[in-house]
Length: 634
Ligand code: COA
Ligand code: AMP
Image (cartoon, rainbow, N blue to C red; front, side, top):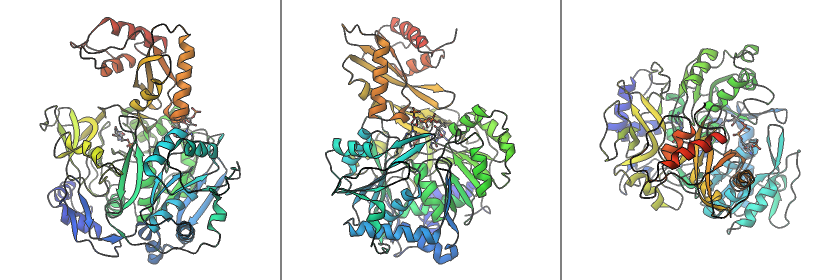
């Protein structure tokens, strides 16, 4: 499996002989006990990878790297323009910090199989906490710092953590956001109460501690002895990561230890074409799957240096921030979301900031998290003159489903396509009746089971909901995206065909926002849709029908709704606009005509659906979207 084999050969082997393929990839991981079966389909559609095997992910990420001579190599470069800090942590130092923190976790009673929630900003302590959990077999669940207390509470009640680990504040551009009040509020709302909270005090804000429950990080690790790695079954959970589904209840995507380590290590060589010792930068957040996989686990499992960047693409301090980091730290591969490039392009359209830095070290730019629009692709490609690789994946899979695999056989790039299915993923396009569609025809993008290693084996304590992914189209995992293959076998992802939207690369549920909006006392009915946005890809826009007799000022109600979504879901939702309408367009059977509404909001032509109950409602919707700045421009 290297550049000496063609993509076709590697791909065919991965699909027709997965045992051989992944068994060979697994040789690159250190096992304390070899697996008995590579792929165990005994309880399909719940597949297991490497059953019978034992390993420890933290051991592979740290101890093993040190044993192979990386003790003094930088493991993490923490680059934080918002605090004016650059710090290097070597593999040796990281191991010391992780094993001490793991020892402290053990002292406080956290054992294998316990859950721990980590609600932290982009600081090294977040990575230390994750790896320390992995070291002792505790299951971490990192919650993105931008989520409001209510969302954190939902995750606390689902994961039932023994412990919560947090910091006194996050820093977003120029804003310092105290975390502790959010944490306290979340614990107050949640029914499950964690036994302890460990707080890392940042100099910008001192958090008040609740005696008996809260403990300061430095006190927590006092007297702790370094903990050894606990051997874990390949199938034991490493982490839970909540992601938006189509309802208000997030899905707890579970990740195992064995398949995850094997797949991520394989991806570094074959997709990203990066070598041990090189600097890999995923400009994302540890709260998202990109952060889990490509800030923390994959770079360390592969012996790379990872960059932990606490800043934004623009404004910290300027649109040259990315070029500064690349040149200062010798980044070989950058991975970020297209929205970050759109933000840079908006502020520096001619790429003048790029010219200030020598970024000859950069070999590839990988983009994912949302559709890479051709404009952004061409702009980035002209600016950088290196391969700009669109690749498609999801929280559920944990690593790319489709990509231009730079470590196997680079293909010519077609703008708008993430190229071809990654080995291991048997991607198909199905029509409404479940028939496989030929190239050229658009339908539901599915993956024939089994999914490769590293993908979700199930949802946390919710096998039933997991089955929804794999039973809607029997034999396939339904991705929720629509798309097609072209005549050359390139895949095109056209967007979600469910109620999930992507705002600045953040996955959000319109259903969750509707649940919040519907709680307003004056709202009779509502719909939230994703409207096209030139910077963030999509932004949510609401439509509300008021209860009969409500005569209040509509703008006042809308501003209350905006406040509610911000308070209950978080500022990251970017829910900033809603139109008050007399009625929502529906079919005669009462289904809201969302795709027609989306076309109206985006100012596109549409056909009046034959199933519509009252076509007049659409004319009214067209008029109302104009009043809030959407729809066709005159
Ligand atoms: N903690 C607290 N609040 C946060 C947060 C965090 N970690 N992340 C975002 N927010 C808040 C922001 O402060 C902002 O609040 P505001 O409405 O009070 O200004 C709101 O959520 C929206 O944030 P964002 O969407 O990030 O908008 P922005 O205008 O601050 O920045 C971009 C725009 C494009 C620069 C930014 O979205 C970006 O860098 N995107 C890249 C996304 C990414 O890396 N995604 C990961 C997938 S690979
Ligand atoms: P998340 O789980 O947050 O990673 O979001 C996954 C969703 O983001 C996918 O189902 C897609 O809708 C979208 N997405 C991610 N990467 C891409 C891409 N390269 N092209 C198009 N859509 C993408």
